[in-house]
Every structure is written in C-alpha cells, then in structure tokens.
Image 1 (tube, rainbow, N blue to C red):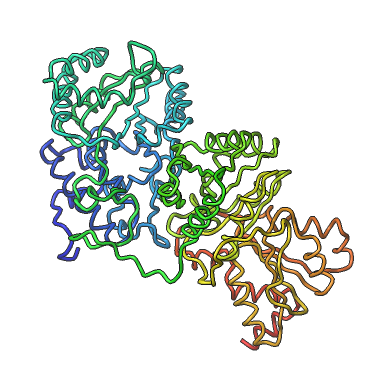
Image 2: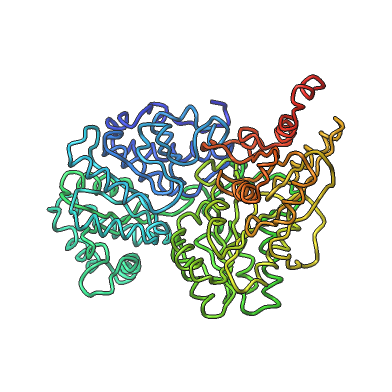
Length: 640
C-alpha cells in the first residue's frame, strides 16, 4: 500500500472471514474502523456506491464473526452495500478494480466468489432467495448452513419482500432476516435502549425476546421511550397487539443499534444459538456512517465519482452537453407548464430519472411510489383511465419488474400511459444488471403500443412532446445514460407524426437504418465509408412501432443492401423490420439484409465505449458490416 492509504494492522491479518474467529470483541470494533477507512480509500479511487456500505460496516464484521460463510449463506439485498463484505472475503487485493473492466462487480455476483451465494443488483430479492436456500438445507443439500438475508428499509417496501415473508412465516423454517433501517439516525437514546436490550437478550430464553423489548422501553426515561417508540413504529401492524413481522410469522428482535459492535455480536450469537424459525432483527444504521462528507450529503454519497478523501470533493469531468436525463426532465416540465393533466411517477429513483427537477416545479404532480415498479405501472394506468396524462419514468432494466402490469393493465386496455425509459442500451460500470437491453423487444411486441427511440437529445425533446400529445394509446420512448450528442436544441418539442422516420443522409448502394442513439456511430461509419468511395444512405427510424413502412420499403427499392442497428436484444426493431420485409416478399427478390443487435450474452462491466466494442456496434464495426454485406470486405481490408 502507498503511504496515503490508511494503516490497517488488524485488517491486514484478515484474508477470509474465518480469520475473525480469534478476534476479541474490542478487536472487532477496531477492525470495523479499519474496514471503514479501507472502504473509503478504495471507493475514492474507483467511484461507486459508498454510503450504503459505510452504514453496514459493523454489521458486516459482526455477521462474519458469528456465522460461518461460505457454508452459512449471507445474502445482501441489492448489493450496493457489499464492498466491506468483499474486502473481508478474499477480494481486498482487487477492491480497487471495482466496477472497472475485468474487475470486481459493484454488486454481489455468484461467479466472482463462493462468499456471494446469490447475485443481486435489483432490490427486494433476498428473503425469497434466502428461503430457497433454507429449503435446500432442510432437504439435505450439502454446503448450506444458516441463511442470513440483509435487506434495507427501502427494499423491504417492495411487495416481493412481503410475499417472501408471508411464505417464510407460513413454512416456519429457520431463516434470519436483518432489516437494515438507515432512514433514522441513531441518537444516543436509541443506543442506550439497544444496549439494555442487548444485555437482556443475551441472557433470556429466545421466546422471551419480545417481552424483554417491551419491558426495556418502559424502563427508559420518557425522552428515550419516545425515540424507541418512533423506531418501532416502522413495523407496527394495523392490528392491535403485535408487529407486522410477527403477524407474518417472524420473531421480531429490536430495534437495535446497528453500529454498536457489542450489541450486534450479542444478538447475533443468541439468535444463532436459539432460533428455531424465521427471525427478523431490526437494526438502525446511518448511511454514510463514519465519513463526514457522506453523512452531511443529502444522498449520503449513495453513488459517487472518484473523490478526495480529505475533502470529499468528487472529481467529475466537465460536461460538454446536457445529460439525456436532464433534457427529459426539462422537456417534461415545459409540457407540464402547458398541460395541467400531466403528472409524473418514479419508483424510488427521483434523482436518477430527473424527476427531482420536476418535483421541485410541480411537487403536487410528482409521485415517488417507492421500490414498487408493478404498482407504479398500474397506478399510472388508473390515473390514465381517470383522465390524467401520466409519465411512468423508470429505467429500462427496472421496467422489466412491472411487465405483467404493462401488458395486462396498460396495453390490453389501450390506456395512454407514457413510459419514459432511461438507461436504454449499455450503461458501463453497473454492468449487465442495469443494461437496458430488452425493452424494445418486450414493448414492440405488444398491440396498441407506440415505441420510440431518441437518436439524440433534440429528438428526445420531440418525443416527450409526442407522448404528451398522444392520448388514445400507450407510448414509450427510450434514451441512453450519459451526455447527449451536443446537437442544437429546440426551444420546445414538436410532436412527431406517429410512425414516420427520417432520412439523415442520402446515398446509394447500401442503406443504414438506425433506431435510437447509435445514429451518431452510423454517421461516423458512413463518413469513413465515403473515404472508400461508398456513400450509404443513413436513416433514423424514430419508431420501432408502428414501423415506417413507406420509408423502409423505399430504402429497399433504391438500395441493394439494408442494415438495421439498435441498442437492444434480438427480437426488437430489426426483427420487426425483417417481418415486414418477409411479408412484403422483398427477400424473394434477393435483398441483402442484416440486423445489428446486442449479442446473445450479458456483457460485463466496462466503459460504455468498450462495452459497445464487445457488442460490435461502434462505427468501425458498422463500417465493416456494410463492406461485408456488399461483398467489399476483402477490398476494404486491403485498403486498410
């Protein structure tokens, strides 16, 4: 290590979690401090998710000190908070490769380590998966011991988590769920209450946990009681006499101080020794704990660029063009200023989708429904049926979670819900779990849908206006992550004619038909081809559904070869074009046709440019495909 990195004498003795077994409680407390410093140091160099991991440092150390991974299965919900876990599980030497090409994933990943028993980058899956492991254990499968699922207070708001708890409570199998509640800061009063609970729990029969918790609250001074009651309010059921978790069949323990190592160790050891059914431990933590810039930031440094450890200042490169997300938000605000029926919905991603800007302008017309994509879609369907104009603003990869609702509640009823699909295409460091690869295919196959893809930020503005004006059926428009192309921006969007594309560059011989944001690469390929004496026509389809039949058949009539390009999987735009051409009998007349789509594989994290290189969708590869299709590949190779 360089001199600028933290001194970590205890952490230096840890290669795997088993090494923690010989540490005293005091040493484990020091180890947590060193682990926090190492996490901050590493993420300052790599960027990534910091705040969530800092909030679970003590919890991570305590779990690994008490349980026996990898036989005991530790499942982190979402995975944002798993960096300290990775450092303790044999990956410290690679922790500064986080989210880089060929490096460690920013989430848990089965292929990376036996200490990652279940991969996760979408939320609310841990209890379902944990119950599956518990059943496998009880069926005698070797290599599965205790199961510990750590889920955040945001993730547990999703319906899937409650479905899993309901099933787990009914099955009554031994399963340990830790609710990492970082919505409430842990003030000393709550810590005092938790310390008292810890002493009671460690000496009481397991079945007396609930009674001990209630008794402890009554024995505290009144201000302390108020703090404890507020913490417990999160889990109060509508029925009198118990918590929601208890009603679902879980033994509830807490709330406890998730940063107090003595309490954590005592509770976890007792639960491990005595639990005979499903248990939920409610731990209060603070996101960004132990790093002042994170604690003081509004987002607790949830996602950060590289930064200076001393000041916390992030080293973001200057922007040359506005991001697509901001362009969308501003365009939607302009439309909403003219139309009071426009409302916007996000599923726990106001900042990521740009709806935080919309909410500042129209707070009463913006709805964050939490991590509940299914509900978000049907909520929008209800608003559309009631006469409003909802924009359902969800990342492509998260919209997958609400697909049944898209079909059943929106498409079948032909309700005018507008889907604003951010993060279309490949997204870089977040890797395959966040890549928007499938929305073209899973939306364009639906009757009654209009599906658009923005070639640049100006086109996105027009597509927002198009969706706002379209009020008799559902529509969707997709746009990528990151900065726009730097094109001239319109003052305000103008609704496009539905199902009409545009010719961007006239040519002959070959035609390149782009859908979405690869248009810039298509034009670069055309420029390079021009240097070879080949000038292809370049067109922007704009719509994957309905297709511009006249444009496509016109291209076919005037060219010997046609290539379609899209940032999506097979089954999307190119497949619909091929179907149109087949039904029109074009292939009977010998058209040369190819469709460039994302490969039939999950592309691992890297820079977006390198990911598109792997996908064979950059300008040089588009150029090569044109040459090959026209039978000029060898000539091109000789000239090169």
